[in-house]
Image (cartoon, rainbow, N blue to C red; front, side, top):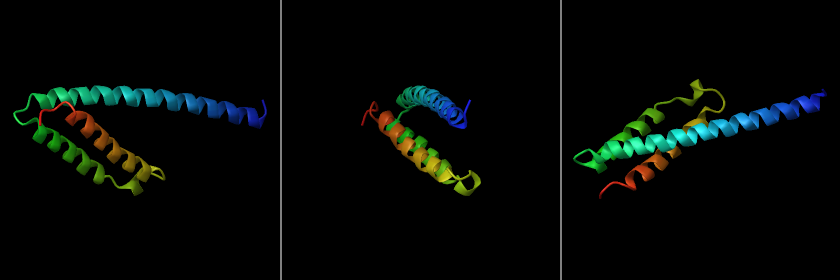
Length: 97
């Protein structure tokens, strides 16, 4: 096999692995959102419970220092904060106001 063919095979393998990981992330996000929704709906003040969960998650992510995570760590941190916002929106969409 030529170097070009090997590189193309490696790229295809990485694309497949990335798609599989994206599927796992999607499933994890859906399950997590459903669990958080069920959990917060049981609280006396669901909106406060949601705020507490989201705030704690944001603080934990903010505490992550990108210099410890390699060259892509700042991208990962940015995406994690955006994901918390997505979860918050999904979580609050079912909570009484």
